[in-house]
Length: 357
Length: 202
Image (cartoon, rainbow over all chains, first blue to last red):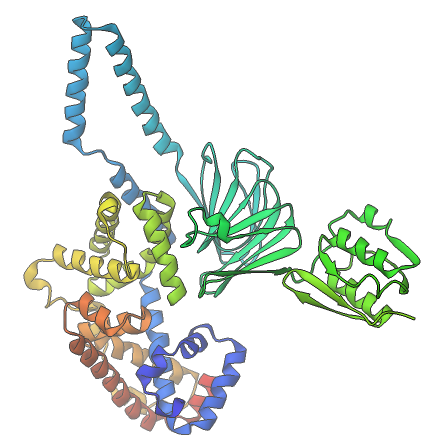
């Protein structure tokens, strides 16, 4: 495919651009191979590469400073908040006329209504001031802890951006995420906590979970550590309430949203950790115990569903205990012990065994 | 790019509904590239900042009258270009040099011939390419930026720059052609092999 590529074709090629601009070592091997197979394209590739790098350098050389960006935004926002003068004046004239008519004693009830109106307007003005946005960028290479107004915490991974209002609204706690963060949310059933990330929203009442939503990724992941979490697309074509298109996740579950087809899949997180405290786990110690009993204990300890044939396993017995290992490590040990296997289908574990003699 | 455009539209719609967070998101996402693009059209940073400020202020004020945008990026680039050109005196618009400072920095062949294959040469060649870029006719340079930095289609470039689609194609072709010619001259001078190895395996 590359033998007929022009410089323009290369410059339009996503894989090529990614290699030039991000330069992952794995891409180097691929493009070295292309060069080897198409030596006649060497010059074209070199030119395209140079041009792309130079253009980016030239553009980025003219980027404004972060201070400039912030100041400019403040100027814009201040500008947008200016109330057009003529209207305001008219309104004041009108208010003055109203108070004169009050002085003239044209009606007491009308006065009260009018002054209420004035107070409401003042409140609205205050609201605008206190509704100011907070924005945190994690440009460091370490995790950055952000304390949110309600006492919840967000742990931002590098290259992550979080926006939220300095004071959360009365009915809802909302944050906007680009990148990846782990959230520990203070319980408050009256005020749901919403994480907006790209095309999906994650809604909780009080729990801990991780959202991974980098702009360049084709997928968004939500991984739950504790509590129940609802994830749903921002917009739905099928239902009025987009939550109906989403999933309810329980601990150790993960939702993957594919941007291309706007589809959710449910699976388990990469390393499901035990949900019970270490002290309680110690109680799960089995000496030559029925396998069925052990599997049920695992279901409880990790909050997962294991599907197995009870009849077939009735003669299987095992000696084991539960520790801090993750679910899959534990399943591997058990399978080895009784000569069985398992597979993961969605968020369920299918346990397959021929039984024991 | 598809996913990004989708995301843009999402925030665009929320912004049209009056959500400041969405407005600020769009600003944060585009202000840097817009500013840099503006600086390529005119080196006066105050003028560029004012144009950006006006554009975003107008956007917020007229948000309820705005339509759904096919491509937010395209909309913003076209608006900014119009704002900048409108703020210039009409007669200077076309005569305005693209990048005055670097226009004078022309490559000279003599200095190339004197060099040997070394790291300095790579730097030198890069600087020569840089000077080649900035000494391109302003509109060719602009077209290159729109196409290869911003990924705009020829139709979009044509509309932003107020030329025909074929005109946009020709501009890119001409620029690439100049690049090819320059590259041939350079590779004759450098006997490129050692250099290539360094570029690809550094």
